[in-house]
Image 1 (cartoon, rainbow, N blue to C red):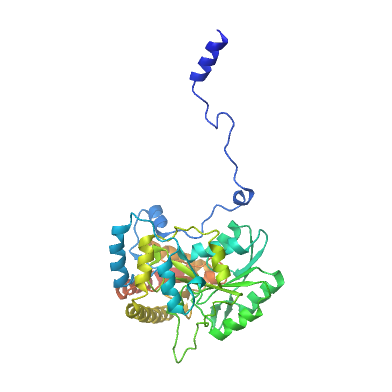
Image 2 (image 1 turned 45 degrees about the vertical axis):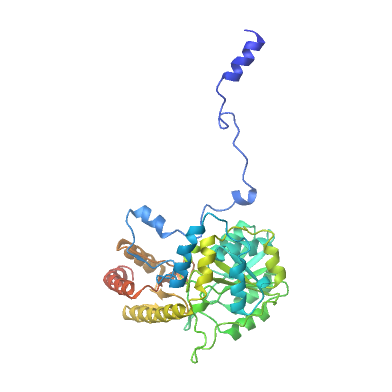
Length: 402
């Protein structure tokens, strides 16, 4: 066969796949290849797919089962007619409204697709590979997820466990930050997953104890549900000083505002920090419907007060229910209550027993919090159904696991 015919035959032959030819594709970076194959959360939808059954009560994700305000609902429905258009990448109208609400400049605010995205931006902006980030052991799972994802090192401080319940160890966090020359320190106030909170004066003293060069990420996702202005319980809200170089504050529309599925969060910080995020953020990450809904939600002050009041009633009901059953309810300034059931084994068994009855709740994974289950405050009918099911399954769980 001539060389010309051989070439033609080779050209017409089916080509080998990359795998057959020994080509395995581009390798992952060493950082990504070394990460565990885990995600921060397993969603209730995934659990439903595994079991083949839907949940009848969704009380595990700390969403607001009361939903968004009527103003936000109407605004989002109307915005669907414009969904063919890109949203404003600067989120300017929403940032302007937030700036007016908090008494700061629009240059002090960045909006992202939830606090989760903002945590990633902050860690990416401030943490070099090998740098230390100090958190509580068992704090919000997205924080260690991003720390590892950007090559940082987490220094975790165990929660306090005493007569006052589970709460962040502020002295331990500050000591760890000084010992490790931490770039970032993460504190949720009010806290998830315990529900505990610190007064403004305690947070201010904690901030003053951090070493030079450390930045405090103050996650205030639940702040609208905290006891603000209560004459009996001192203020939990640290006054906003947007130009403090030591502090970034994080807020969300996912909790009290009832818009978790819309994914809207924001950060308040000095303008130099906010401007730095423009270099790395996803500029069309907050969609048009979400922006419009969040803006309208700010006009629903009366509705927000109703939700906050109903959540407070629900917390009291859960606390009474827990005590009735011999559990220890943790004080909470959030839309959930953590119930200490005595041991991790009991908590796991109760989680499974409730799932069998169609109830989705969660439990923290790190000790000593793993003695608890965490239950979102639902609507009055949901709370009544949960109480009925819990009373039915708890005696069996408690007697089986002493």
